[in-house]
Amino acid sequence: MRFTTSLSKGLGGVAMVFIAVGTPPCENGEADVSVLDAVCREIARSADGFKLVIVKSTVPVGTNERIARVLQRDGAHPSCFRVASNPEFLREGTAVTDFLYPDRIVLGCNCPRSADLLTKLYKPLLDGSYAVSSNAIPAPDNARIPAHVVLTSSASAELIKHASNALLATKISFINAIANICEVNGADVKEVVDGIGTDQRIGSKFLKPGIGYGGSCFPKDLKALWAVAHEGGYDFHLLEDVMQINKEQRAQFVRKVRQALWTLKGKRLGVLGLAFKGGTDDVRESPAIAVIRQLLEEGSYITAYDPAATSRARVEFPADAQITFATSAYAAATGADALLVLTEWEEFTALDLERLRMRMKQPILLDGRNLFSPQQMKEAGFIYYSVGRAEVVPELEPDDSSREAA
Ligand code: UGA
Image 1 (cartoon, rainbow, N blue to C red):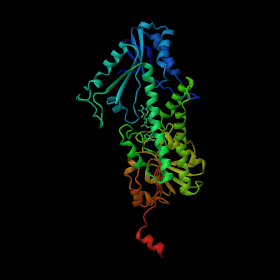
Image 2: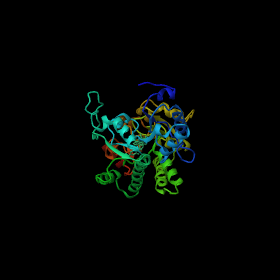
Image 3: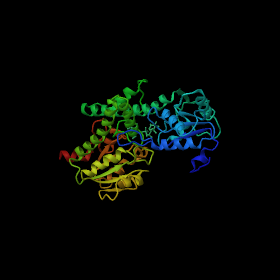
Image 4: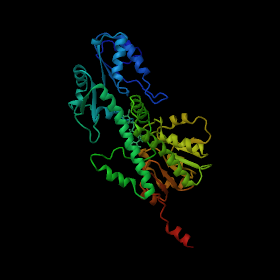
């Protein structure tokens, strides 16, 4: 593997070029493809023989066609290039195994030559030979070996990427809406998810309720898909609702904290989790950060802990006297009027609940990710609020009940 900052050197003699540049959102939600455009111009100028230009970046449908026009306009002869779409479906934190053991590999090719080149490139994953090789990274549970290939046009491949993320986000907002209905009507969202998810047509994945989705992909891609639809004259109301429910879910959680504490002003809150999801240090569009901002605005004092994202989160709250960062969950809980779980870190489930409770001013835990079970928290002596499930209060100790009776 070689690294270079010279595009023309990097392109010298290669048959396939992957473009994986960022496509951040513009003000109006559209994907900003200006970097992609700049790269394509350079590729056109550096052409030295046939190249397959493969777009990995998440782009609006129709981008491949535009790239082909840019390449031609900037001097590349049509016989010297083809453009193909090969979207990625990697999750932060598990990107390597997601790449090596994908559910599917989507190849958006408008000609047999492109399809042939890309199929050859992915051969070790498509014929299963990678998985049985001596240096293979172990396969995760339920890995699909060999990988399934989906051969489509480039436009369909571009849309598959956006539609996949939009549908996953829709599942999350849907179950969050159901969770809210559960809360009002005394149903338990976990039981509802078990009942829904066992229908194989629906599946149980991406039905975990909480304080909504975040990260650098779902929020951006939903806006971009909405903008593509709008541009084409179709109002994709469903996506607007998905985004609105996601936003409202954070506000709903803040309301829950306020109700539990009567007022937020002057309250000391311990926060567990800053990253947009567990297993990453990424705080981009993190629901945890959004909730914290709201709590600070209402006058709370926060001590936050995250296993990996603290240094990135600090940048979000420069010189804010109301928030400090702790180096352990127990330190975050110390002296707290309530403890809030905002990110689904696996390690939080292994916390010593007794130790945590003993350090707090009041044993109130608000679980924005349903990491704990109500029964477990009841036994551990917490007043426990979660998402889509009834609030629990601790069973009274024999001593406490006699004190009450007296
Ligand atoms: C997402 C997709 O899952 C990947 O397939 C895709 O390749 C990637 O975006 C991308 O477009 O590059 P990622 O952003 O890493 O991956 O995160 P996810 O694991 O999908 O989680 C996104 C958000 O949804 C997180 O905030 C998570 O906490 C939340 N979530 C997820 C829920 O609230 N409930 C769930 O059931 C699942």
